[in-house]
Each structure stands twice: as structure tokens, then as C-alpha cells.
Length: 307
Image (cartoon, rainbow, N blue to C red):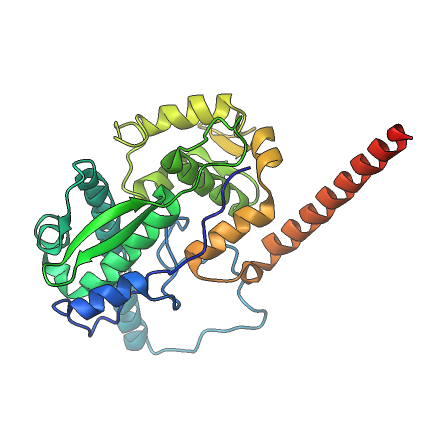
């Protein structure tokens, strides 16, 4: 069975007003279990909330032309800031993974010098979000070794997959990547265009056609391993010009995990409850009921054969 992300202390970003010079802020960012801003890994735009539906009758307040221009400028600036913050978090994740290959402690000064730069005042938030991505997607926990010298290490936190016959047994990063793709597919209505999958990889700081030390060549991993092992289906979308292709869940994913488990994975990334997406939640409940009925039917037939 595909592994769900384990429960535990979740990182929390600090408010922008907190200064990164405080090691207490860094510690809290890595150890607090309160709510934090939702992950944007499955989102195509920073402001997009997957599955969210605007309430009926909701209207935008009227604005003067000058006010509308000011609001548009403010919104654009906020989006740019969000995109830059997202990019910095993704770059920090890759930097931490690369440094971990040497199994030597990683210092805060290295992170600021090589990745964070002039965003150092947002260090607590950036490192908290990076820790979240490392935990859920790659199966590593970021631990602070020394508060005085601000040193960190990565610890592999993924447990082995239960079934010894699983093709991805013990491969935490590949399993995390597969769960991300399954989540994207489910939240997009049970199919996701190929371009959407590659865009998600780029938000993770992973280039589809470029070698990655954890995944090899990600596009090859997805197109060959995940598709050939029947975790994913890949087909051309009819009546598209230019031609487009899409991914959907393969039969192996339907056997080894469920819509409710994947929705739970997505909900953890966004720091929300599964009910936040009512359409997907109702579909997952129906899927659970179907699975329960199928299981009861199999057990009934088995007991009949025994007698």
C-alpha cells in the first residue's frame, strides 16, 4: 500500500515582522505543530485554491478607476512576491538535498549566502516551508543540530512500504513524487494534462528533462517506470490540436491507495481538512463505500465456498 505521510510536528512559518537573527524563531519554525500557510506545490497560481468554489451570490465591492488601478498594482506586486518566495523555497529544498549527500551539517549562513540572499528577513518562513516540502515530498525531516551555530541535518523519516512486493518499496523520494502526481490528477478531476505535471515538477525545483540526483531523469521516471508499472495511465486527449496528452490513475494506484488517502495527503500539504474540497470529498466517500461493498462481497463469497 502506498504510504501516507506520517503524523508529527509540522513546521510553522513566522510572521514577516520576526527577525531571522533569533534562533528561537528558527526552532519554532521547525518544531511547532500549529497551522501554516498552505503549500502551493499543486497550484498553478499562488492565489489558486484547488477545488475551492466561490459562494453563490458573492460579489466584488465597487471601486473607482483609480482605486481599481491601485488594487491591480498591489495584487500584481503580491503575486510577484509570492512567486519569488515559492522559487526560493524550491531552490532551498534542492540545496539542502544536495548538501545532505555529503552527510555534513548545513549552516544557516550557507543557506542565506547561496540561496536566500536578500530575503533573509523571511528566513523562518522559508525554512519552515522548505522543511514541510522535504517531509511530505521527499521523506526527510530537517532537524536543527546546534542553536548557537545554526546548523541543520536531514533525517530520512519514511518507513518502508508494508507490502514486500511493492515496486517502490523503501524509495521515499520516488514514492513522494508519485503521491504528488496522483494528488494533482485527482484534484484536477481525475486527469491532468501532461503540461500540468511538468509545471508541478518545476515548482518543486525539478526540471523534467534534466538529471536529478534523487529521481534520475524525472520525465523518464514518470513516462517509463510509473506508466509501465501501471501506477499511471498516459493517453492522447481526443480532438486536441496541437495534440495534447494527459495522465490518469493506473490500475495499480487504484489497488494500492484510495481517493480518500490521496485527498488526505493533499489536505496535509494545504493545512486544511479534506472537507475543504466538497466535490472531491464526496467522490472519495463514494469510493470508500464502493470499496467496502466490494470487500464485503468478496468475504461473503469466500465464506460460502468454505461451507
